[in-house]
Image (tube, one colour):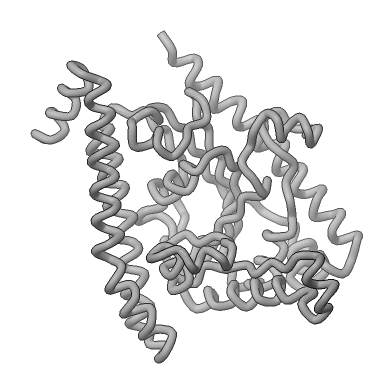
Length: 316
């Protein structure tokens, strides 16, 4: 196509100019889409909250999917020579209900999730801080799309008002339950924060490429959604050229990317115990959960090493 040829030509003749053009184009398109979609998001979101109308909920989801599609189209048009190696199971149902766990290195990770999931996975949600609701457009969109929003109370606040204890967990459970009647992918970065070498060393992590996994968010999702879940997916992301920041994505600096998504099985007895509240109330269940996660994380650590090695072997 003419646009693709023009981009490739500019990248060869003036790579610095091409990067600036890519960043400016992406910024303009994303901003325009966000502003253009804000009014219908607000109208349909408010209608959904007031009336509970299914058509309003579906419209909000369609607007979000359009925004994601536009971003993905930008990536494909602006960076036609990227080497992105993506593997997903063939039997994933785009109308299913999945819990997705992943390693976490960069803000780019969420854009990667959006890129790989279009037409293959249900719309991805993730746990967010309730305070994000005050960010114009983005915060309200999260709310209208039923992202589980966590209200965290400080130890000082709980000391002053003991009734606040446990409210954040109950609110998260309530938010998770809003997803029961629709397709969803609920993403949980089990490390709880982005990986850095400094954090890795401070944790004395037993894994080469990962921080220690946390189990609370995944357990909460299982307890809240239980038998409505069609499966648990494990996503592994690698950036062979180094961890990028968000600007790097739109500058075209993420030329190499590896993504591996696979289904994983949790022992039925453990799943049932967590679904019935065992993670919160039974130390043996909690220990079993961490043992299972350790096995998942050991396999993921080996997978990261293999994925990086595949890129290295392809170097001239």
